Image (cartoon, rainbow, N blue to C red):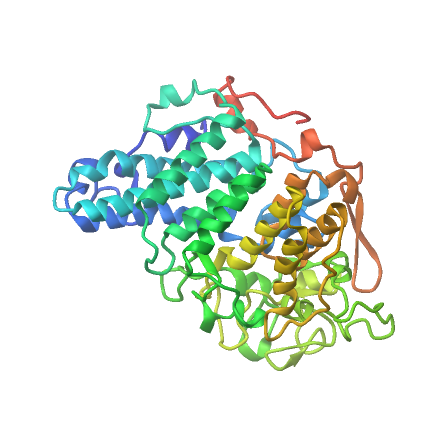
Length: 508
């Protein structure tokens, strides 16, 4: 049977196909004619847009996307092909991230468009409530187009519901048109969102921050600085005093959180997968962790010593940047009171020698995929580094930019590193900033975007993944990294087969 893709399907169907889009009620109990009647309907519909963020191919796999970089290795083929993306062997016929990121982003866009076209039908919804919800819909549509632009470049631009026939005739908009739509939607969000909201919902700070990151991706440094300053003017965000505590359940929603993907434990599979796929096997707590993504020696080697002295090869984990042990579970460390990798082990970590510690909960037992720990899509430490980068790239106030970097290296109670010398050239300051971003944001899914926007793929690849016993595992981008090809994913062949007007990206 011919497969009708999300781009064609999700742009044409309404709530009569609830399983595909809202996943809330059976399709024989809800239609567009009966649905838009109460404020609870509007809340249900906007929640359906948020729900797409939880998919593994949008933001639901979190820091696992570091497997697309030298930072991590992915063993589990079925979990998403980050292994192939990171190795440079992805093809246009692949499913997983190639196809499913496309599908789910357009599903989210469909839901946002459908919401914006129908929410005014609810007469009992106050104007102030509508304003906020419309701001959320614009924000989320921007997030999905933001992901599409970074992943595929120019894509079909759809801001209303259309017929399946129209969907099959869509052409790719230019990358400039997509980014213009992203910023227009973020502007609508900024005009309508409040400073504070319940956990997991978009706020003014989230919209300012995500718009800033869109400018960052395109090296629009003046605008990056402008929006970093707008975030600071809210006087709402600050570095959390503990780097370790920043990623623990009891501290979620802390002062560093601008926008987080919200999870909860319970009976309806609303928890995150991080503890299931990050944690090592722990028989004491009944956890059969797979650790499908694991840090590499390449990342471990990037952590410096506290005082800048050489790493002791006989005691390689002594005197190291504390963020190494807060991020990575390495040999000789304890997790939940058990020694790694003697008392506790994992699948992928057995190959590369390390496991992920960040975003795993050590203070409570987590069963299955029901971890309630939120994932921070954007946090203030990232904002500070964006501000420092903009100052460095503008070649102005470089000493002040180094001050910002030093605030991250010395400003937390549990991270105290030797301060960076303020008197640096622009080129040296850039190197310091890029290394600091890699370490501070390691295993948070940021480094893949950084590699692409810095255009450094040809400089860092090929690189070898070495196992825990020093054995060779894999060469990432064995044939080298080609910017015109490897900075983008291919469009799915299944989409092009249904719409010949869609042209493929170079090299695929």
